[in-house]
Length: 87
Image (cartoon, rainbow, N blue to C red; front, side, top):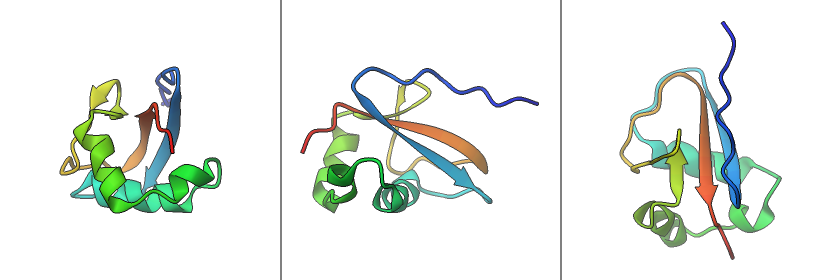
């Protein structure tokens, strides 16, 4: 079985979540992944308030759909795109 990698939207930052087990909330997993990544240091320093705003503004997407902080995340690989992040 081959992985389908969705196209990365223009003006976005992609975070790849690789989970060994399903998680109940996207926001907790995603914030940990953002803090651990090394590609975008400005994003790495994001505050919890600014992180919540990204969800409220519809800038966090999975498969082109707006993601909710309370969304469950399946085991395996999930591609999360953060659209238009500016510090």
